[in-house]
Length: 618
Image 1 (tube, helix red, strand yellow):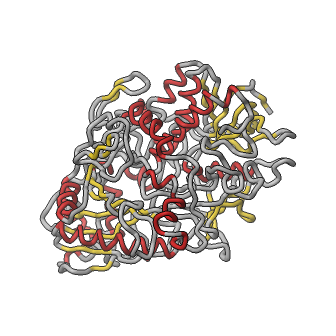
Image 2 (cartoon, one colour):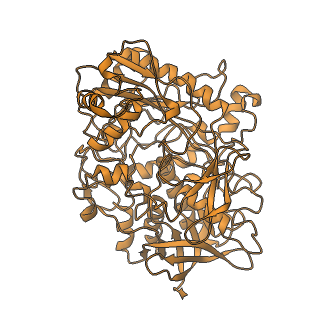
Image 3 (tube, helix red, strand yellow):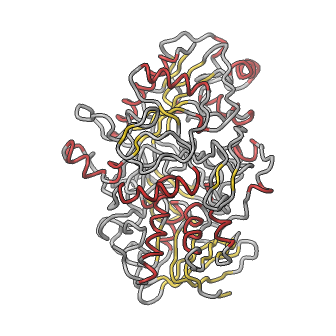
């Protein structure tokens, strides 16, 4: 075994959070090493002319290799688990930049009430409104504490959007429900698509408040934290699941990682898999052990601080695998909290419409060309007379309708440009007549043959979908743990996911789907298909890669794994980053909050931790 010289920080992975921390800490003179399971990936030359739908969209070329490591799933603790053999529900990335390479770049701030979720709902509606068995809790971190770091991310990365709340003043055209911003977006929003404009007009006509999707995609040329001026989006249509060929889409390897590398204090070791966080007899981390995937050799990287900065499920698994006599159940797990509060999201398409004779040019652009309404997200509407808590974003208008991928998706999901709906979620035709020639395009069982091909040719660019992204609450019977049966290629236990939608999810979906139906009807489609009820969760159809929880933050080791900085209570020189810290998931994309938390943790490390090593920060 090779033992490398000790460094200040070693990170597991070289994605968004590792890149931010490396850039922030090397600027202060700290030496950082990242151990990355994948390879190098940069715009030049890796993403030049990479418009290969088969490789990127259908064969998930930038994702984990499931033949080497996967996860198992079961709907509840009474059922057996089985390994996930092919990609479906979520698609974690691998390689420098992580999932930040192929993300859709929809960038949000969570609402102030999201950070004090349990307290807020009890104060407004009473404790009885928390569903039975639900383990929601406050974050131990207020929106006001995180706001400067949201703003830092906005300006260092370059976010395009329309400000809705500037220092308490509500501005026209933005999100009127958002928390106070100390500064406006640095860039104006991206162009919106024709479906987005139609959706916006219909939503506004119903009294709602549509606004453009905020995006980590440059609407104009912009000089970011690296000092380099990046080009604006060219609306090429190859964005989600692709690296950006012009660096208009933000990722750690666009700005933060190159800036850290330029200091000479940062190193990334690619094709290297961390298998253990090493511990001493005091229960502190001493570094990590990893395997070079090209040679099979094992190496050790000693470090003062270990940061688990991989995908949510990767971070939780490594906490559980890393054990000694002081932490016999794993790091952070002295009080049995690791794996708790696993959450997901309701990422669904309640309504699809055909607009006969129209062409929307939906092959252009990206998913951020949409308009959004937040009138029914979070607690932006009164739940007093409703039978659920929580809410969902409602969106319409993204592009990226690629030739191969759209044919695959249209046959199963009725024109939805997001991945295919499951068999259990076949839409219900209603309200509007369906010409027979449209039958195999939307909601039909026949998904092959001459008729289907003709329908696809005529109508693939005449469909519009309205989607929702809903909150996901944690419950006692949904969690992450090590599978007792299945192992990876190295003989280590796989992580087991126990998860199913609950009644609160079904009620929330039913309510929001009715609002979506009203908006689609107001848009005037030739035919409309709707899915009014939430189907059971399945692992084989894509929904989102917004897995959260398992190493949640809080104010005490009795109900959390880390403090607000992501510092593990029982092993204070180990930090966790990313969405594993979320006590529950909001109805918004998590990456904006993940980035802000990485900046927040970086400030804690720079300004407090290294002055008092191995002490828990307050």
